[in-house]
Amino acid sequence: MLIEVAPRRVEAAAVDTLAVPVRADAPRDAAGLGAIASRLGALAPGELRAEPGAAAVLHGDGGRVVAAGVGAGSDPDDLRWAAAAVASELAHVGGRVGWAIDPAMPLPAAEQAIAVVEGLMLGGYDPGLWKHARDRRVPDALVLLTDGDDDGVLAAGRRAAVISRWTNRARDLANEPANTLTPAALAGYAESFAAEHAHLSAGALGPEQAAELGMGAFLGVAAGSHQPARMILMRHDPPNAVDGLVLGLVGKAITFDTGGISLKAPLYMEDMKGDMAGGGAVIAGMAALAELGTPVRAIAVVAATENMAGGGAYRPGDILRAGNGTTIEVVDTDAEGRIVLADALWYARREGATHIVDFATLTGTMEKALGDFYAGVYGAPAEWRDQVVAAGEASGDHAWPFPLHPRYRRYIESDFADLKNLNRRGQGGPTYAAEFLHHFAGDGPWAHIDMAGTGFFTWSRDDYLWQRGGTGYGVRLIAELGRRLAA
View 1 (tube, rainbow, N blue to C red):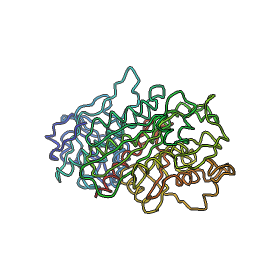
View 2 (cartoon, rainbow, N blue to C red):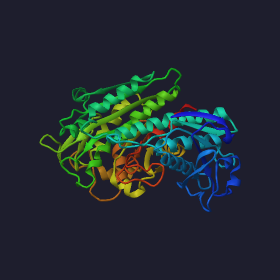
View 3 (cartoon, helix red, strand yellow):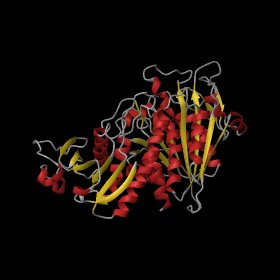
View 4 (cartoon, rainbow, N blue to C red):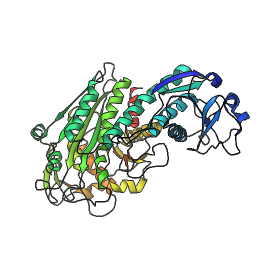
């Protein structure tokens, strides 16, 4: 979607549709809409509503107008929701859309632009890539109508468009079925994304190379699949990078998760194609960093494999040896994400990452705790965890901090090996998993994002991310974290 700016003379705007934010504290009649009134005919009482997500399509001599509720206009999520409602109303129309930046809104003009672009692009996303009949359309262009800092608004809008495009690309990856999105195919996507950008490279270790490095944890999970595993490695190495910092992005990419021998229940198992959403976000996030020219060196490590049941599959009771030498007793083969991340974290640190963030659809109990709006974040030191949380909150990928403590370590110690991958106590599941990962994170700042509820929707959500399937959670956070680290 092209992003343009134009003066806020809406009566002369060269657009097919004019989108107007309606605030709760603003007049609701046509006279209160100033120059926009020239485009409208008579309004029925209550036709303009300020509730976020409410939208009314109005027609007059001046053309089509969509009035979209933004609540008080102080929450970027409400503005995203409003823009998504506009995208929904125009799903079969497309064309050029003008959005009137509201100088009276509490949000600054540049923040309005970011929220509107994200709402249109993420809210207009169509997950039905495999449908023969697809008639949904996104706008061809967005014209931001403003009387303020046109350059700042344009830059903010275009940056948001880049990030939103890669967020939607991550959603495509999460929605692709496992019969085509194999670990090798995911590695191929990483390589194709890297080929589009200077200073970005990608490759992958196959099972033989992973075995040479001693990645017995990762390969143990992969043993039951006929699809060869891949440990994907990407590097962003810009010429003007910040000295002394290498951001490590680690992703869980279980391209299909049956639960292994500890088989999952069949209900909604088809959504387990989305168990690679963390890895997909990392791959797309690296491409976003590169396209934005973010002056931060970054390494991505994505552990891509299936978790299958079969004669070659690993079993409860097996003991695996990770790349750092730690032995792991397998208690439950459906707690496989932390096992593959063990080797991925070690590998990222080995390859030079100074600050690590891992992204994983890890524990169902995190989804029960926080639902589908917030991801849980653990980390050490706490200052790094809080920096990651702040980037999430600023970007719209909402995150909530959780604690770590050495006393949790005893719950993952095994009678037979150094660690076990699950504790049967039925409590503290996400925290025990985080403590397990902490062991493999090495020296230096590390944060773990459990995005089980936010990465893939089994049910649609009633806001701008309303579609079933992949959400692209993590791409916006990665872009914002990179921007902050470069500042």
